[in-house]
Image (cartoon, rainbow, N blue to C red):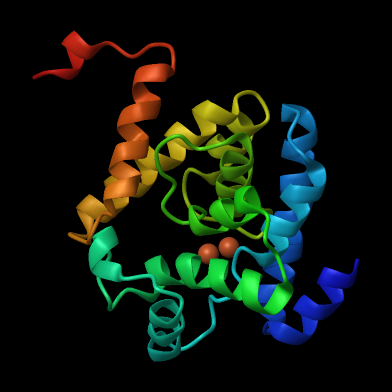
Amino acid sequence: MEIEKKLKEFLPDMRFKHSVRVKNIAVKLAKINGCSEEKAAIASYLHDVARDIPLKSMLDLLEEDGFFLQDHGIPDNNPLLLHAHAGKVVARKQFGVHDKEVLRSIELHTTGGESMSLLDKVIFVADYIEPGRTFSGVKETRDLAFKSLDRAVLYIFKTLIKNLLNRELFICKTTLLGYNELVQNCSGYNQIEAVP
Ligand SMILES: [Fe+2]
Ligand SMILES: [Fe+2]
């Protein structure tokens, strides 16, 4: 695939290998869930295309593109959050990707969000469960991913939020909104029990 060749030259080896592993899982999840395998492949190849860009360059890239952090409630000192937004710009400008669904799934791959499409969920989950991941909870997420994509997304939201809370770190509002939306749609949710 042309994109894989270009990406190999663009990314450090470790990041390139991660992207290929994410792509392999994303295509499988796309097939199972009736999502475009082609879009899943492009989005997963490119999801971390800006992960290794220095923070200052990422900020410049976003500003040039008219993306203002304050409008999105994103701090300007958090490359982990910014790389997803910068990745969308790099995918468009340097890889010629203009498909809005693909670009949005790149943008949401770290935080998730509300009204996630099938493709958004496939990329979000594939990035989390690719075989190189070893953190706690990954096995449970892998098992869930091939049974229910929504359940896997919810599990990732819960893990992310708990982890960030425990470490007293910033939680992006799109993650909280995505969690609230999904928890009401997944079976087993009981609003009364959820109130202490
Ligand atoms: Fe990423
Ligand atoms: Fe990634």
